[in-house]
Image 1: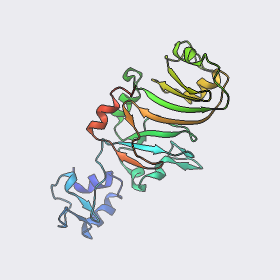
Image 2: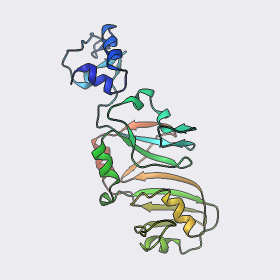
Image 3: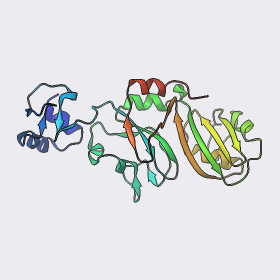
Image 4: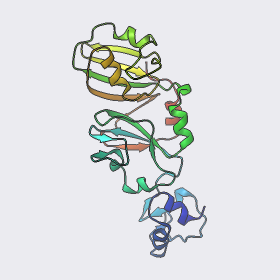
Length: 236
């Protein structure tokens, strides 16, 4: 792929704008030598204004999603894409969230521009566990874990019951819920189905991945080791 197209696809500008960046000498190698549009160099040897290129197509990112952001490209309020450099929204292929967290839910959110990878992660056959910490408006009754694990819970407006889910009670109003599917507002609707209301919801793990030291609003690209953890087992 020609360098102009490569860099344009990463969202740095139109091909015309990227061509101008070459003419202005803004695109160099790590030693500061000016590159030209027909040079043949590897991705990691390209700098724009002395900064390394963003990850190539096929990237997977982890975001610590704060409250108040929606997983959308268009919304009257704040959207998660505002937490990334503006050019990320101009990438081709497009950068998409892997599933969604609602506006008020915080925690681990994955994004990728690899459609096949996205499908693999969300497909029910992958059985990737997602762990949520929930703060509840009312005390737990005591039978929620049994109901959630039964595989018979049918949510309102749904035609098929939920897959078995694991509930760990922390105290009377705090619980940890592990899901292997991702229906619309599933965690909140599950607690509503047993007469409770979720006040706060935080996703701490997806597969074997956790947020580590990422603060709310921070993100990082994931590498091959992270990918192994993603498709591995969650913590006990």
